[in-house]
Image (tube, rainbow, N blue to C red; front, side, top):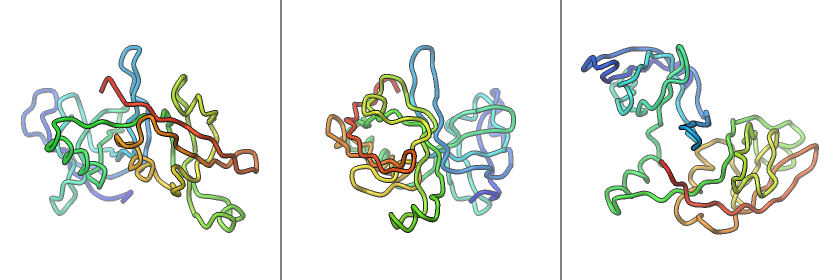
Length: 203
């Protein structure tokens, strides 16, 4: 939870077995990560102010009861560290790696942030939250489907989505190359589009 105490373990700057402490400062982040001309999305990450530096990646992020809640992944700026959460999606990836030696993931091309729905829309849809589109990756399946920054994604694959994890769960091998119906709220109206996720490469 936001405000929860966490400890980051790793080897920052080559200093073996270092430990830093902080709090969870944000949840459900979805951020673009660029490497040269390439781009991928880190979705549903934990944001922490525990000091992270090069060498922390791959180390554990643990709570005060010594339970691993995330894997340190990146430094987004001073006082902003990111960790991949240990959740159902992560466990599915680990199981696929053990079983097949690789994981095929679908790529949609959306950078999103959880957002509460207006009261009128809550009554209309029965949902309390959705995903606000922060960025659409140019040339991606989402871009070709006509999704725009500012859209509120209400459902994908006819399943309500209210956090990044609910969208992530749809982005496995079964979704690659298959039509994915998406409903968004835009300018006071519900808009239906069809996207066709492609295989995520280069990660």
